[in-house]
Structure formats: C-alpha cells, structure tokens
Image 1 (cartoon, helix red, strand yellow):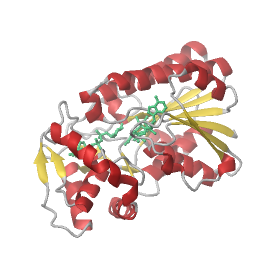
Image 2 (tube, protein in one colour; image 1 turned 90 degrees about the vertical axis):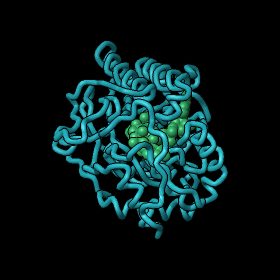
Image 3 (cartoon, rainbow, N blue to C red; image 1 turned 45 degrees about the horizontal axis):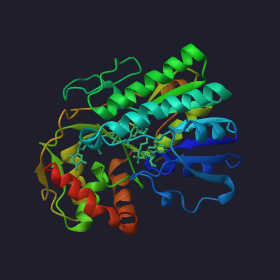
Image 4 (cartoon, helix red, strand yellow; image 1 turned 180 degrees about the vertical axis):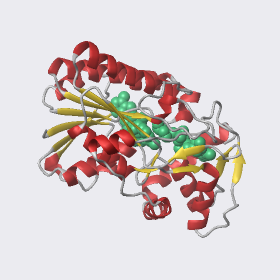
Length: 333
Ligand code: NAD
Ligand code: TDX
C-alpha cells in the first residue's frame, strides 16, 4: 500500500494522521483531498516533505475529482466531514452534503476502481449513556444518534456497510471517542477554553458541566487507524478509545489549574440542545484482535502539552478567535 488518499487531511485529526503516516511509513505517498472549509488549514501540513505529499483542493462530493484521484490510489482513508455538533444545530445542510453525499461519492469511486476504503467515524452514532451506567459502547451497541451531526455520521457508516455487503467494497470502519491535541479548531471544547484563557476570556461550561467525554490523544487515534487500515478484517467495525472518561467540569478546572489560574474562574452558559450525557468506549476488540495499545494515556500530561502548543502557536488561531466567540455569544454560550 503506497499511494493513499486522506480526505479531510487539512483538518484536525486528518492532518495529525498525515504527519503520523509520513513518519511511520517512509515508502508511502499521501494525497490529501480537502475542501478547505473554515475547519481546514493548509498550515497543518507545513514542514512535510513535498515529494511525499500532494495537496488537492477539492470537494469529496465532486464525483469527477474523486474518480480521477481514486483511479490512481491503493487506499482511501476518509476523515473529511462537517464535524461540529453546535454548527449542525444551527445549519444542518452542509452535514448532509459532506457527511452523506460526500461519503456516497467516495464509495462509488472505490467500488468502481476496487480500492481499499477506511471510514473514520465517531462514538456519537451510539447516542449516550447514563452517568451511573457501568456499560460502555461496543461494536454491538445499537445506533441511536442525537444530533444532526451524529445522525449524518451514523448514516455514512450504514452506507459503508451496505457498499461492503451489496457491492463487495473492501472497507473497514472505526468509531473513535473525543480527540484532543494540536491543530484542533478552536470552536471545540478544549482548545476553546485554552484560547479563552490565553485571550483573557473566562472559560465557558455548558450547563452544569457533568457531561462525560472519553478523551483520547489524537496520536493514539492515528496509530489505531493505521493498524486497522493494514490489519483490520474487511467489513468489520473497530471502536477506538483509551479509557479517558472525564466530566467537562473537571477538564475546565484542570485547564485553569495547569495555566496557573483560579480553577473556579469560569462561567456556566446555556446548555446544548439535546446534549449527550456520556460517551464511553470499550476498545477490547481492537486491542485483542489487532494488538493495539494507546501510548498517550496520561491526560494531565497530554493536556499540558496541548496548552503549550496553543500558547506557542498563537498566530495559528488568533485570527479566528473573535468570530468564533461572536458565533457562540449569539447562542448565549
Ligand atoms: P475538522 O472539522 O477539524 O476537519 C474536517 C476537515 O474536512 C477539514 O479540513 C475540512 O476542510 C474538510 N472537509 C469538510 N468538508 C469537506 C468536503 N466536502 N470535501 C473535502 N474536504 C472537506 O474535523 P476533525 O475533528 O478532524 O474530524 C475528522 C473526522 O474524525 C470526522 O469524520 C469526524 O466525524 C471524526 N471524528 C472526530 C472526533 C473528534 O473528537 N474531533 C472523534 C471521532 C471521530
Ligand atoms: O464551550 C464549550 N463548552 C462546553 O461545555 C464547548 C464548545 C463544548 N462544551 C461541552 C459540550 C460537550 O459535552 O464539552 C463537550 C465537548 O464538546 P465538543 O468539543 O463540541 O465535542 P463533542 O460534541 O463531544 O463532539 C466531539 O467528539 C466526537 C467532536 O466534535 C465530534 O466531531 C466527534 O464525533
């Protein structure tokens, strides 16, 4: 497998995966196909060797562009998506176009050219768990998405499954928990709070802040995806998680503490409509079947490194900060 397409490779998790692959697989060439929406940034790919990376500015829902690239590739790793729940509550349309029509367009191309496909998805397709529920999501948990975002991701997963069964497409799916790390857009929870503190704004916690997310460092997500791409069984789904459950209140307080501030110096703001209570992943299948293990499991250290990254890369995010906060202010958040 030498020539892979990474869709959404200029976004947060996709760009981290591109860095990982370039470092770990010296004989591979990566073609990034990215529309450069507000969430895509070419700077995320700076410093990578030009002879091993081709950047194509295009839409995954554009059948002509997709077909011409897929015809020359050995595999497609599909990260491109509209990814933010809050945006999907304001305007669901782009989520339908990219997450559903875009995935359909890629599936038709890999079907035509018999190219290996790996689909990146989320634990949010399973809905949420109660705080006191000992259960975690497994590959057998029924789909029950809550938001326009998670319902389009669930729909895209089902398209992949149907294309495997009906057309013999050689695909795998992975559903990962909440990622954190460098290059994450500042609309998302952790970078929003870090950049708030750096900008002299009090962090904003939705509701009481008791909602739980299962945090994984994006480097661990990358190693898991590479594992599934190379060794996963065709037609199978693998859940990716690193046992990182934390409630939002604890995370905000830890960010403030690590940044040398009063840990209680934050605001409670309007809750998200339909806000999922808790996500938790059981990644036993990936660990036992494919022998994957996470490496970046010390959340305090990972968060401190992430804070350092945003502090050292102010020029990466400052231009967007005012507009992101103005958008949140409209929703009282
Ligand atoms: P992101 O919003 O940071 O990046 C998305 C990228 O896709 C951007 O570069 C954007 O320009 C590109 N894109 C959007 N629409 C496109 C289109 N029509 N054609 C081509 N490119 C397009 O997202 P992220 O947080 O990096 O998430 C990447 C993937 O991982 C998504 O599929 C998401 O559902 C999934 N995921 C995310 C998380 C998380 O915690 N962020 C967790 C599990 C799964
Ligand atoms: O300012 C905030 N305050 C706050 O309390 C923001 C932006 C969020 N929150 C809460 C909402 C969630 O409980 O923090 C938690 C995390 O929020 P997000 O960063 O928006 O992530 P989430 O909705 O959990 O979804 C993320 O993980 C799963 C990604 O954005 C998805 O793409 C992925 O599928």
